[in-house]
Image 1 (cartoon, rainbow, N blue to C red):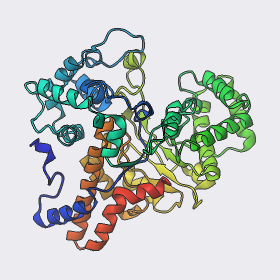
Image 2 (spheres, helix red, strand yellow):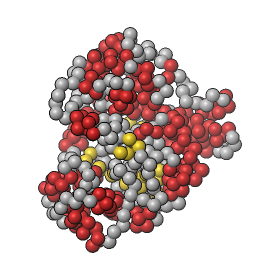
Image 3 (spheres, one colour):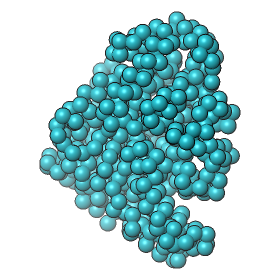
Image 4 (cartoon, one colour):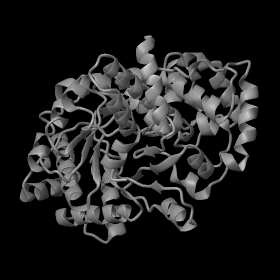
Length: 469
């Protein structure tokens, strides 16, 4: 057996709490997975073709993996990560896999190790530890299985017991893959989410051309403020027609604004002309979060805010390989003053749901839990990205529960591109939550019947309710 697939993985070492955690977990481990936000490719489910090889399934698209290897001197080209300019990279899947296996020890103690061992054991039936000497056997086993029909994307979605999964597409996307899924008659539920960063953030590459394209797609005059807002409303409705229940916003900060209509129009006109004033560009992003929240009041989309990453920190990697290559670095994030303009506008609305995420854990107890613990519109997203880990999840529960409780949170979402790791990530979250609840029961702060109810809600019901699924 692989060491990190023990039945008591992540449960308390103390006997009484461990026994309670086991009992709680037994009641929820088989619940369906609700994956309300993520980045898997809808093309997989539309075409339902076999995954190409173990490396391209498990290594090449996963920045959790290649950022660690890069930190130890392994070149991205040697891991098969494609370049923007099409310069040569490793294309031999077995060579990529062996290079990864030789460095697998680097992941000791990381959540990536937990997820990957889970995938090897539970998905591919491999119980032999991964290292240089076992790499070829692992590769051959996985390669063979990936040719079987029950390892194609749709079959895996069903095997993983995923009730619903949301992908994330940009505002300019034509959603052709979602249309193909819908038209195929397949019963798997794959929905989209509206990500408008490319037409909201003036610092996004090609922003002005993106606004022109938005106008072409919608027939709206995106040279005017009112036409620009109408274009968003139209695109949001289009995304809703393909199942979207949420929008997603990856802003550098949580800054919001609440300008008058006249001031917003004046600001938009300057931005549309290509303003290079950083204050104006920042203010425009801030105003657009509030505009998106107001639109959510009208159309019901849940508003997700993912702030606090300085994205593409390495200019050289960004220029060579593009976005999402492991160089998005957390920054300090203010929520109390940054969100106040938005909250003054819509924070007391009971029919609005705004899900806040953070990469700044210092804000949990000081800012996020107190805000979510009083404003009806606010809910706390789970520990995210660098904190999607056992320790990060524990800290999240410890630092938010006393003030925000459980019911101002939204359960767990995996936020991943790595499709095979989804069951592993949810399993880790369920185990950590059961361990946390077991401690409350052992300390006589929670009844055992309440803990069983909460375990099911944290694993399943809260996400369905929050994301209107």
